[in-house]
Length: 384
Image (cartoon, rainbow, N blue to C red; front, side):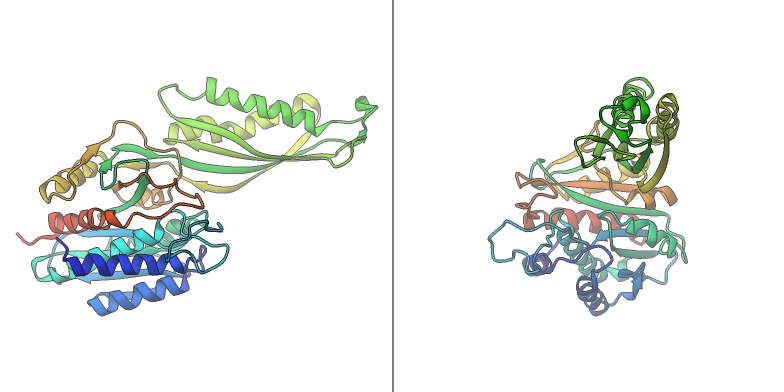
């Protein structure tokens, strides 16, 4: 499917991107490099979407489906501990999630797809997205209209997965990655002397009660056949040994696998918080500071991805999972809220895990991941 030169060029590109990581909405050099390559290949390129995003289009001029492929471009604020030659040259920043590999993958596929343009029909959109890491860049791209004019009928993307065999391609139909709701809870009590708690309303005691009660949502409100977890990620209050503080601040992170589990957890946070605070005479403020919906793959498109992977022998190891591979969130879910599609996975082998200072994308999987995008283009856009 790819020549040796194309693979080697993709590896050089991937490692170049790894050297120059850029944070969410700051991916200027990454976007510039991608845009230049896409224009050179013959795509119509629009830059500056959702700040630094790119839309590259191949309009065959022939009637057919409209499909989209997505890659994310941003890095993380992590100090890289690797010592290889392509380690980060931007101190304190690192491609610790493989977005350098995702970008290189789609550029690799874009080259082969353009070579076959005379055999294709319909319209292909390539989305190079900023700010997947906590910036909801996919939502910003959707709001900027990348799925419109013409309207996308199906969208596809992927993520590398450390801990799965190198080059294994797998799909989880239905719920595939967790939703992420993060809240800031400020409990307002009445400050007082540590020796006279009856004259105060202790927000630490109220907050501790809330921490315990929140786990009841997981145990008694969410179906045991669904997945979800609540983590109190921070709890800050007070700074003196003899003072009951006037307020406490908690950050609550909620993961869910589908709308019903999200409703059972995030949907009841305010109710439980109010009940606990009312019981002790405290008040509260609740701020929803971050939200990504659960990622759910369309079952029919999931079957289509697996079928095309087999037809074009994308990998020697193709699997359909019957369990969610992770409760981690992925903002590709925003695209899937708008149009059907599938987010597939490719095993990264025994590398360090995502967001780890020793992580590195496995260049050996470029051919599999890029091959899946090419297989989708062939399977969905080939002229009959």
